[in-house]
Image (cartoon, rainbow, N blue to C red; front, side, top):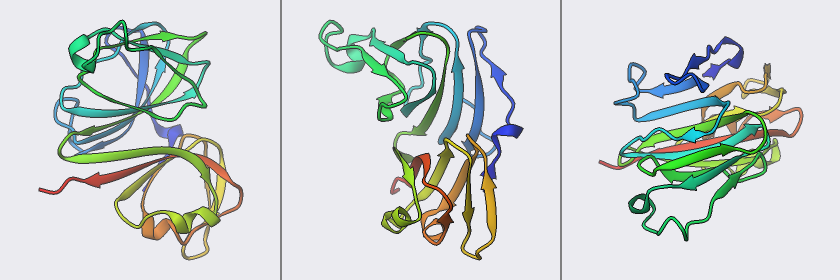
Length: 203
């Protein structure tokens, strides 16, 4: 299933300091209080605290802009004194940063506004593994055949599916596909992507 970025509408934050593109939510009729999986992109225009999401595991990546400096303001959330917990500079070359939704974090822009990519899963219901890589035909055979894949394409690309039909994908399109299907695809160019592997927790 392909979710086109060109068809996605931005929703302003309540405080007016940014906007969010909700890319995917599960269950489909869920809201911010009861989702199990939520994928979004946010345009951050000013400094400020992260929203608190209790019981949620988060993964954050930077798509555009110079960076975000993350500082920890709640000793109990990190289990370390805030003075000994170093700030984290998240840039476009950083690995996706994993953290708990309960943590009290303040973000500071490094330069101008940024666009980030946010994966959130309910702890105990799902696990998410988020990686950024160059997607090529050769690497598809190495993808473990378990779980569901969510791919955010960072540049335009073309591919042939398992039936050898050609398709085009635009930057920031979001694709949800099983790993056994995508292993048969062929990409015309090496394509930078963020891959989120969703694994449903037992029980």
